[in-house]
Image 1 (cartoon, rainbow, N blue to C red):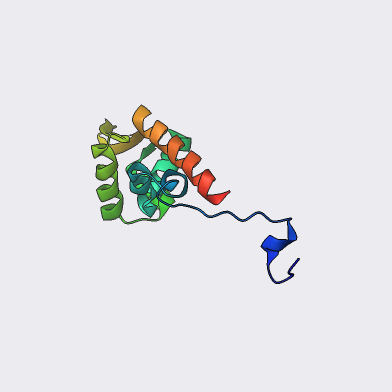
Image 2: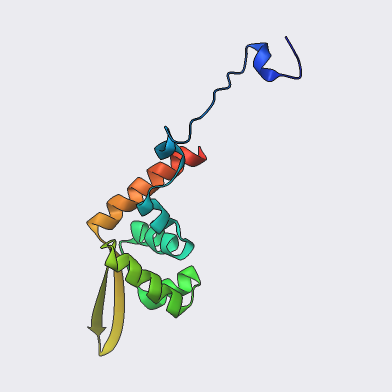
Length: 119
């Protein structure tokens, strides 16, 4: 037994990882990478728990600029992860964001893959 080499103690097993063979276990999918962008992740996480949110309220809650929120919301809508709906309530315009079924499944998959990496 060599104290400078933990492998020789017999208590620690060290294996070699072949990144090509096990790539899916260590890296996000393209969909996960799309969601992982910080503002998109904030939008998805908020809508995952709240179902719907007014864009002005979401902007204040997430502390992002209107332009960033609008840009990333549009990108999420293009992927069918969220829906954007315009409503008028008492002659006042509201933009309502909500998570779609596709978006909910994508976010659940993202969370599952993140848990594999982090834990």
